[in-house]
Length: 326
Image (cartoon, rainbow, N blue to C red; front, side, top):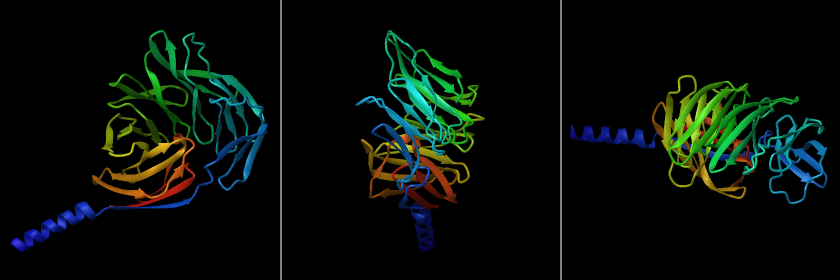
């Protein structure tokens, strides 16, 4: 009986501790990883292999640190000219229209930011911090390609920490916070109608909306949690140690959370580790990646499911292919 018991215990721990694994391999960046460069008086949007898919004339202001180009998968792009002025270009490189996102606050504001789905169906411009005396507020609005904007978010004393538009373009999530204990995410449809507010107990670093937007992933530098947008209930959560979390998202098909950690210096992400958390089985598969990748914008990293427990992380200079088993 003693031998049988010991054998059973060893078998149990083998399944529990060694029954899961994760393999990481790298591949050329997917076609949706577009690069945007300003050369002379021309903006060029190119695929990872260097093939230029769009270009347009643009006269830049030299050495403006707020200048930024936001490329979209259909070749269109948006230019942030300075602190709060944007110019929209179509997929032929022609100007659609300029737009100002300035609040005109006499006390100042931070550089305006932009969030959109990959095809530009829903575009959100937001002011992460607007100073009004001793208060630090924020605001966001949805813009259309025509001459219209809709103010959809305003906080007098909360700063915006992150904004995410679902890949479908149908839903928007806005994270805001104040001090160390007031952090929340407001989820709305693409017209600005609020659906739900979800609180989070740490300063929010990033967000993701799974699929059409039914599931919300919220993460700080060391913790991730997933919520059902319809009910507000938490689906699962996990803590991360070591290097800070740079990306996290949820796969509803597999009931897994995928988290990417690493040290980001400039645009170089190194000391990379990926964890896949099986929420249903309560198991974790993790693996370090020996190389480094270039990341121009953390918001462009996305998770694509290619099979059961198989995923590809895109939006970097290399795709990371993941194969987990539980």
